[in-house]
Length: 315
Length: 277
Image (cartoon, rainbow over all chains, first blue to last red; front, top):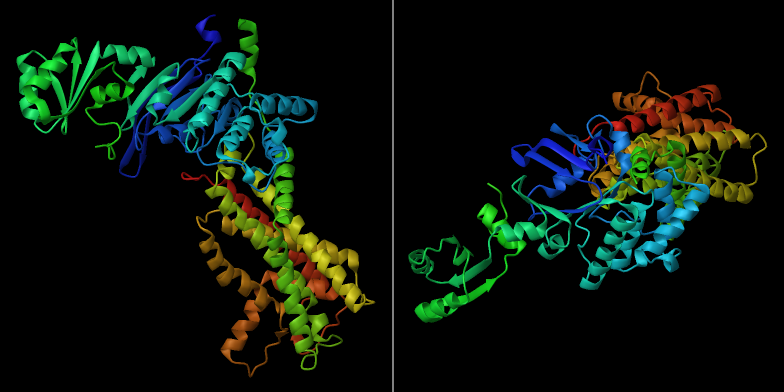
């Protein structure tokens, strides 16, 4: 396939966005190829939702541009909206309407009717496993089922790019797994590109590619496995009440530790014997000691110098 | 493979504005009648007022050929329309708080479809409620011989659409239903009270105080006064010398202009660019 025949599913080009003095996005560029599940991972306040709103044409661009399959969000809003399926974090279902009525509402917004609509309804409700719920009021459905109806609505018009804002919020683990199955099926069967935002590390790990966001910028983009491997073999994490002493001890052994509060993180080639040596030298001054494969949390910490969870205010 | 992808790349769904408008209007209709308390709220209170005031003030009020129950009939119709318009447009605020409105805003249909759907849907509900009451009242009271039922229904439809459009105009920028209640108390209820719905508009004389003079003109400049007068004419009322009442032609003209202005205001409010929707 020639590159000109397959423009990027999403091309974010030097986008800035600020709410008054607060800078939400800072010169952000990002490209996403079609046919992928792409996760935007970041803590609250990292700019994911702002980016999401800009792609979804809900907020006007302040600078830069975003292209969805080559169509400019700035200049081709109508076309972009037709290419997008959007599932918001806030439920968009009308609780007073039945599942079928909600889907019909969506169909009218996207110009679907007649036999096409009947086929699509049959298709998406089967895909989402809600065929037997068509006549239930959506207000009476469980959280997981509601999410599936949202998803059915989102893919009804066969969008080329499906945007999902925090799709797992409020779902129990089983429903999450369910949702993820539905998403991978969608990618494999229809070639839909899926871009989702998440603050859940294990969820991002399941995506084809991810972008880690921090303070309105991407700090890492790539396949999750690759990002983890880039950190080096293993990661040693030490919780101690004497970080300075331990850091010095590590430095004597040519190991550089990154300190975040009372936690020390060491990357690089290490063997299990270091655990014994540390325990022998510091004993009870260590609260916890783990050696493992780097996680996406470690990637985030390595790139930003911040904890993923305790992080609130970007500088 | 590449061919399939190419054709698929070219497809961007495009909504039909009319289909979307119709569906949004239909949605209002289903929602309203599924919430029984809303039906009761919008219809019940005006009817109770009509019965209470109508019987209570029976002996103390007379306007030309009409007793108070007959006089107050157009006002009750307008109140039903006004309440229904308020109830249906207040849902814009709920739609915004939930994600429904966002969902419509990202769809490939122009924004005016939202306003059009609300106005048509809400207007139709208000109209239907008013007709229900009108039928009851006419059965109860007997149809006045000079009445023009067709004109009555048409003017009621126009008023329903105009007031719903006004509701859209006020509700669109609101973030809370409390704000809308303030508008309701400060604007919508006075609009109704000072329209000749409840008491006739007195003529000014040289001996009147400034206050009476101002009141007269407020009522005279209130567009709803003309809708009420139009309804009253078509229910067979005869003009009374001591009260001011516009002619039927003027009533129609002002009602049509009012309708146009409200639809325009709602339309402009909805399509106005907004950073924080």
